[in-house]
Image 1: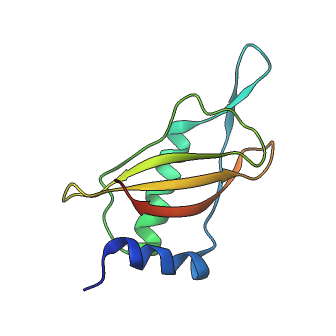
Image 2: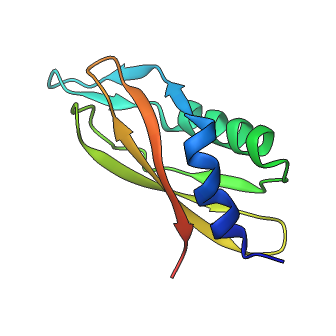
Length: 105
């Protein structure tokens, strides 16, 4: 049996997972990623593509929308295993691409 992270890496070529998320305005004119929507979308997308149950996804609640920037979220599985999902912000509309899924060290 292959490690879960190897299976996940191979899926990126066929998956082309794109997440479109809403963002929330801050008082200073900055916008931030809606972490709740990001977490729900990542969880649903990974469960569908990997055919595995995801216990939880945790993303930062203060991630500013800056085109080209990356940030990470923690993906937790029922057995206690965790992985780090790396997401890239594509544009000012807060469209995201999942660019990596690696074991948490």
